[in-house]
Amino acid sequence: MKAVFKSATTLGVSLLLVSAFVAQPAFANGPIGEHVNHLQANIKDYSEEVEWMIGKVDTMVSNYESKGAKAIKSDDLIEYWESVKFHSAIETNFVPVYASIWQGIYGVKMAIDNNKPATEARKEQQAMNAALWQGLGAVKLAAQFQQKGLLANVKATATTSMTQSATIDEIKHKLDRVIAKYAERLSDEATSIVHDTYLHLFEGVEGTLIEQDAKLVEILEKDFNVTLPKAISDNKSVDEVREVVSSMHTKLDRAKVLLEKAEKARKDVF
Amino acid sequence: MKRRTFIQGLAAFGAIGALPLPLSRALAANIANPVSVDDLPKLEGELTLYLGRGEGGLYENVLQAIQDRNPNFKLGIRRGPTAALANTIVAEAKAGVRRADLFWAVDSGAIGLVSDAGLAQPIPSDLSAQLQPQFRYKDWAPVTGRVRTIPYNTSRLTKEQIPTSIMDIADSDLSIGWAPAYASFQSFVTAMRILEGDDKTAKWLKKIKKRAKTYAGELGVVMAVERGEVDIGFANHYYTLRLKSGKPDAKLDLAFTQQDAGCLVNASGILALNDDPLATHFMRYLLSIEVQGYLAREAYEIPLVNGVPLPEGLPSLANISPPKVDLTQLADLRPTIALMRNSGVL
Image 1 (cartoon, rainbow over the protein chains, first blue to last red):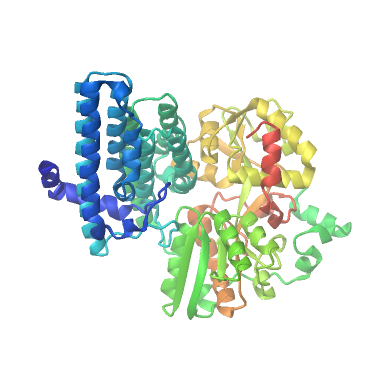
Image 2: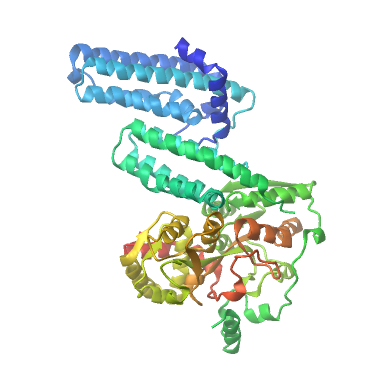
């Protein structure tokens, strides 16, 4: 835990988090409590919830180790996670870690459901624990930004303008949510986010982008419409889906540079 | 038949009454010259605009420029999907609330929804007179247009090989790319329903489906035509122009059908929700020669104001013959979607 916090305070990670927080208007699918707009006041609760979650999973894995799969209900893992407020705090603020938490939870669950050796369940448990601590670190940092007014409230309606390059940030955020929902075993929802992101966000910038780099648009078109949906429908592993998204992120970074260049070159309206 | 000939023919046969704004009035009206922002009144005060997502942020640039030019003017903007905002405006009105003064929508169907609810204010005649006659409506102003086109692969076809009737394309042996889930395509099918009727449209959809390859969006359609995956596609004009701008040697050109839904000119539009002159003055800025020119130059949209010079490559309305359709009739997509589902297209 200390190691995670220590690394989270390094300049590089902090900058990464700043950019992730500031760039992301958050849209949640499930019920999101008002507490996400008051992170600092809820840090104590979040910390207790993380400790509680880790303890519950540890108890379950210990019972699995000593009594076997029949003695436990692995579905409880999902209920534990969905019952904590911290769930939406991390979902609205740092979705890549949110995806890793789900990945860890399902890692433990699948190890139990498939009667894998307890050591394997422990390995997945460790990955889940690390993701939870990392998530708590991210929420604490987000709370600091929120205190300084650097973090927008969670809203369902955009009230600020979105430039084309900011749209790319939003697309990347949506793709992170695709991983999160896929890790959450909500494949249809993940596919639906891919589709909506293409139609409502990427479609709005690809006109300008194609003037800058037609080949790049062609590759991203294939990623949005073939590669990523197919990885989901083929039930690839979360890591494989993440790899596709990561590759799209790299291309979208290139797209952002090109869009910023085009924006600068644009003549004034008047 | 050229568009102008068609209009004259309609006038002679007394069919004008069916048009959006009686064409006799439109033709009789003076066609005003485009107005420069230099001649517009300064905007002072506050307005709230509901903005349906526009062409990749370029509408935002226009709004910012208007505000920069008018330091005593404050514009509150609520952004969202066009259809959702139209529904919001109607719902707010039913609840006795009016939060928006203006609604700038990316498609005229959403405008129709608000107009049909009786919430839009009449457009002053001098403002209307700046628009080309076929784009004059009583309570909203089209801002810019987009044309339905047939992009085709120039290494496989000549323009002459493409039927000039959208209905005849269904009986041709051409391979086709389309994006039936796409909003612009569905508006085009709605226009076909209005012009040809549901039966003919259903038959057309079924025939096309047999030879069509489906894409998620219309840029995808145009790129597939350019790659030679299909001979032709159905798409708005600007995708082809943009692809050719990024790839000048693209084996791609545009063909147009004549006087049918295949060359429908749809429009973005603005309406005022109250009679505050400030709202009307704001609309004048969108019809100014500078804004019209900017959107034509940067977004490849077709200016709908008389006398605005067209950038090179943009299709001129004078050279195509779009059908006469009241664009606000494109508002209700439900029968179209039902028809497309029943035809196995969606």
